[in-house]
Image 1 (cartoon, rainbow, N blue to C red):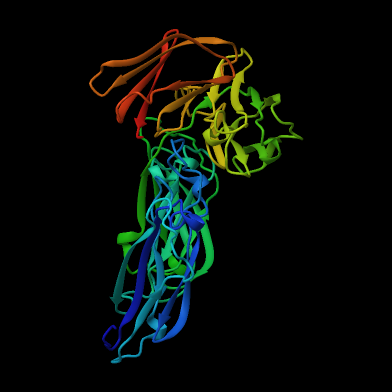
Image 2 (tube, rainbow, N blue to C red):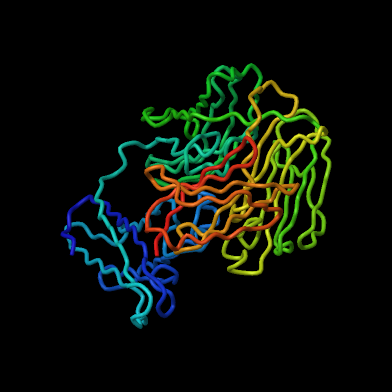
Length: 451
């Protein structure tokens, strides 16, 4: 029950996540539910408690079941807030009854882990907007180093930002000034229709990198002339982002793409800065290597690899000994066969790489990601090491505890487009460091043992 007041706006904010699974329906973590919100005894809203985009998790790759959708959360992603505007139901100087009802029809059968929900809510009261014209920059998606935007960065093409209307009048137009520090300033005229507190995501024309100073990694955005007038609050009209510059590649590239057992769900595209497709895959067969050569002109490009099933090119739950699936890989080489880029195989639904050809952005090329995966992690006793070297290689495998004591060692281990499973069930629960050595290169993976 909320007591009434005059000239009052109300908004209910709810964050809810489900946990525990293994019983009937795998509730609460892995079962979608639709709850109801009653205002003054009447159902006015429904709330779907389900996050269906965990394959786009910004924290990837990672151990465990991070690909699977969950009850309003993904491992490593933010928990989103559901906003319910209650102002239309509020009568000045009268009370308001709010009832949030969980979906009925579920009784835990006692199996698996105890199911429960974590719910946090706030009822916000606020007055009328302080300004008539007040456009604000809400967020910079790219270019940005923000950890939640890493799937879209680094980039060299079209910046993406979000704006918000903080004024009483609908926002129908604005001017956006943007550019890299030390580079050329650009402008864009936006048009649309945003009500109070509404937001819009905007893709701006490609960045002009002329005169860019690569030592200053700052990008700025300024929002001006809302509806052609003067913004009444300038405190939220400017925003900066720190960013990384994408690498510079040669104009001729060779792409090696090996499909896995999900070839029907795999696609790739190479696009220019306008999003026009320059190259794309044809028909793909399972477990087949395809080699394509790209001849590119000066400019900005982006490579995208997608899996419609959301399981990348390799996912531990499909791999032996857990399944009969196979692993693929994707690599970019130059004409001298030097390895330029290796894409992580465990990427969910999409992975990308922006790069420039013949432009003034000069930075060292990205160091190729290692072609080694370790799963499952955490583990209850066995660890599978998967590797996809082009030629058979011999590895040294060492496992150390947190005090640096070596508790496991195997030398040599030959892994060629395959896997090696080791048993560590005899060790105590805890955190271990696995070092995998090949020649002068070593990779260290943190392993969590929890039986």
